Image (cartoon, rainbow, N blue to C red; front, side):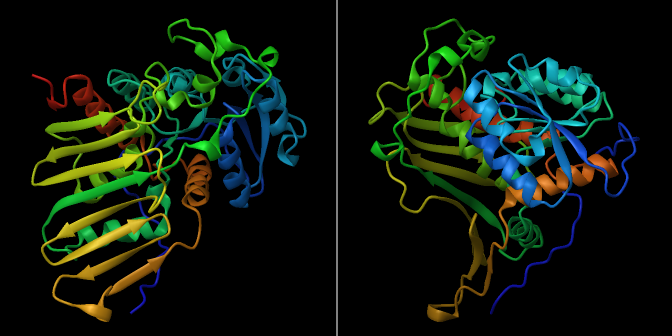
Length: 390
């Protein structure tokens, strides 16, 4: 039996709807976008933006490394774009409607708040926060304005993830008591960072509010694995999956976290490269496992219920009934027909014009990042922590 995708659009979270747009858009009018942080993830985001078919132009490109700014300028949509090193010049441009932020994590909240204060809508890559404390400031900034902020949790716009959540919340699995999450990637010999021309990099600007420290290629390219700039696998990878788990299970934070992590392979990193973690929620548990020197099986989630188990990855989802054996399972199956970042960017553009709540509102981004931060807190506290901390 094949499950046919349901492409209807609905609001995932019923929150506040913005009262008015920054300005009114005609049906064919181009959005003017500011780009802040022009690395590899921004390249993917802009590719997805172009795939939406929504007319837009890049008005400004900000990055601390000249070749990355120049790369964006090669796009037809950036034919008339200006460039800068200081991010504040982008929100200051009154002609810009929205900004896309894909900087290292330690810059996210500062830049997003500045853009919102300047009346810009924001697409903010995950994790939206770098620390637990930043969540309150970001939420207040969004909810005190009329601006749209879409968190970079693209599963919330990915059709088969949305259908999976519908099935879970509709009771198709029975009582779900365990969610297994995993993600394996390989940062080994095939992904050695390429040298850069340090003369074209503003390292001090890149550091921002992080502690002053000398440039290293490993920190610049793999900043996610150093505490001053990122939070390792818990905020890079787990954040995506715990967002799906919390969304499907209608939960927003664990009551306890346990985490065992080690640096077995990448000794120069500060964050562990091998992780086992568990999170207690009211009525169910979430487990996570992953390592950064093996990529077999990639990443995914399993929702295990008393009646059935749902397995979902970015390639699709399947449901296996508990009382059926052999080739009678899976009873439902759906394959992905579009990269979720494209549909997520389309939703962002649609919300800029409609002023409706985006699929991944600020609260979803904050709670997903918070779970990863709590896991890291457990790691730093010897492997376990209650939440809230007593």
